[in-house]
Length: 309
Ligand SMILES: Cc1cc2nc3c(=O)[nH]c(=O)nc-3n(C[C@H](O)[C@H](O)[C@H](O)COP(=O)(O)O)c2cc1C
Image (cartoon, rainbow, N blue to C red; front, side, top):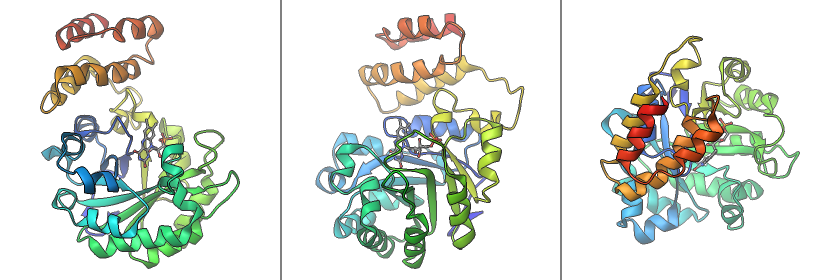
């Protein structure tokens, strides 16, 4: 499958996840076979007003093994979105993805993220302005609708295809569902069968069985989010029952990669969260979580990792 001119080594993609999918995590997932990855969502307005701030520079940092890689932006003002698409910092990415799925109240209340699912005309304008402004393919990641039982996916999908969006990722839930209830595979299959552009299916893929369920919808690629937390090797292990991974090496590599641009203080804070995910399937996970949540230096973390894994 291709998105515009982009080719992928695998049709399993790593989902954009705020606070998670920085260059280090993406790079690890790519080495384990993820075919495509995205930055975490980045505010278009924030970028326009403070693109030289260290925070944004770090959010936009990429490594060479990440190609192709997408940047994900969110916003609701077509002109600002277009301006952002033209920034050299954004055009260095292979693809620009627009977030129309984030259900967080502070985003939705500004009619951004899944807030756009309540105003399809505006959603279309946002996408169109990005397509016109960008020389790179523009994609959209969305949910199936806003209200609990709504389904605007086909209506919006057709509008997006018409204005030149190159692919759509559909998380098979509504905004109001957040993460509850089941993924609606029929709606994903319907979108796939009615549109010409590639469709990426997303939601609740954690293992081979759930991968198969999503695959049956006929989608062109499958995106994994939570299933990769603490398991960035899922892109390989999903197809190999007895896949053995050297967790110690992966985790230390995760720390080492972060040291490329982050301070020790930031890394410790950030990796506490990842360490809790890395131990979540271990028999004594609760005890380990307590120990690991108190790390205060990289050396101390490495000593603990040597003991635990
Ligand atoms: C911690 C976390 C952060 C997320 N941040 C983003 C984000 O920045 N942009 C986005 O489009 N979706 C974001 N999502 C949603 C995921 O990309 C994905 O659509 C969702 O988790 C469903 O897929 P899953 O069942 O494989 O996790 C986030 C999800 C999680 C768990």
